Length: 626
Ligand code: ADP
Image (cartoon, rainbow, N blue to C red; front, top):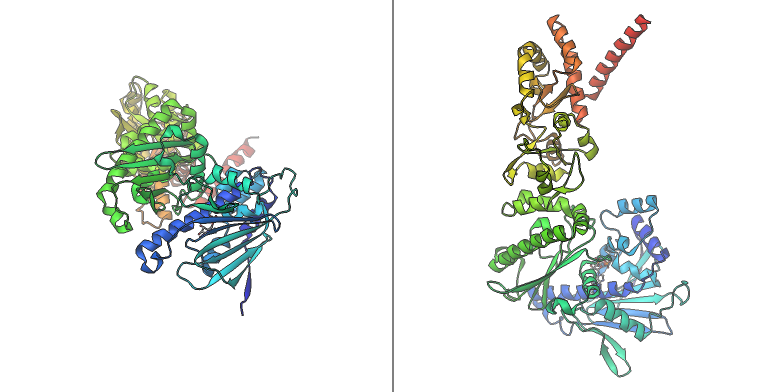
């Protein structure tokens, strides 16, 4: 006797389903593309499994997809004889709609009241659930390759689904849609059981699928797709729309790609590549759990999904295929890592992609900026990781500065003052925080533009880049600012330096736990003090990042620089002359320097108390006066 179990979708899943069902989305026919893509993936998976599993080899015979429609019963089904699913797979894959990042995404969607568009939905990879846009109920009858038992999954999109034992001839999956009654939606004219409609949807969205998509016609079986590998056709023969559909098929993205790269190489290694830059970063870009990257084919035969060896990690946002003529068909993951052909392809693809990005940047700055905003932080990982292409990647980078938005280093250098010796930057924290940082004062006064690095990845690469072009790269928050060399500044400070010696020493002793030294500043014009790192020390943000990753980070004491031109210093000098204890003043000075750069105090309560005492004294004095 079979038992039927009932399950609930997790809450985000329910919310997402509701959105799908009730959104009035104008291209509902894309549900079919999603089901065919899943069927094609299922066949790919069986092919790959059959390479290493003798038992499965015989099952990968006549791989195909079959569509069947019944106008009277109002059903449409999509079947494949691919990998299939067991009970656990069904729960894991079809019971878990929402993937990582979904909760956050839904919250934003509800808060902003933004309408649910195909692009937004597509970011989740909710492919299968698109069925609920056209169906009241969906059934999945499936049997995993190699298993005897089949299962039936059923849901009416109401928050629950059931799974029960079932029978199925052979391995594979059949998804049956019980279509909504026609005319239920205002603009619903299409009848998805009509062979003409089905044929045209398949041709439009799924023509290049590598397995035959069959349907019973009047004169027997008919194959609806041409199965022609889109990358083996010349670029002039393929329309933009066809490329876009192919991109959607393999990326499971619903939006158009931003750009495509069609590339073929003959020689030491022979291959064709068709790569796409997505228009939006996927939710898992930084979680690194995505599994859609570059598909590998050997002589038109699908070998594997997401072949990570083909491109460096900092290009992991690319989607597409590589089809090699030289690799063996029975390629294993282990061989891949050592294969010389793969290394050649990877080098060649990397170079090509960087060239294409360079030309996009030159020819189409607007598109490039859109690309950079989505993927710049990922590309910047390469500046750190790929020494060979470091300068090329630096040339691709766009930055915010104290003066301008999104400029390249080239633009920055072009606008440099004649007496400016280095490329200056300030890193860490938010853009607004950076813009207000006291470290910038003297630079701003001299009219020097400063690059602002506000992404955590900037701390990594700026630590390894010494220069660009023939200019050194310098942090304005590290070392003694090069402002020393400028006429005027040096003389001013040097003259009075002796006067401050005793005070600086006293402040240094009071803060011996926190700072390595206290010295007069050449970079401050308004603020009383700021903290400065050694030329090669880690930034506070980097220390925090490493600590949050569980790495031991030694306490790095920086230098406290004080501004001789600030009235506070005169006062301190006087108190020091009167031989008063300056511990509290030193702590206040240090604390406000930490806060001014957007940092966190080790003991905020203590700082707050000092500040309150100071305020009380000031207010008290005022009381006496009046
Ligand atoms: P996506 O395809 O973007 O991962 P879907 O919601 O369309 O998301 O499908 C979820 C998962 O269900 C797939 O990743 C796959 O593991 C499984 N699946 C769906 N359809 C099939 C099928 N026809 N054959 C085998 N597995 C399938």
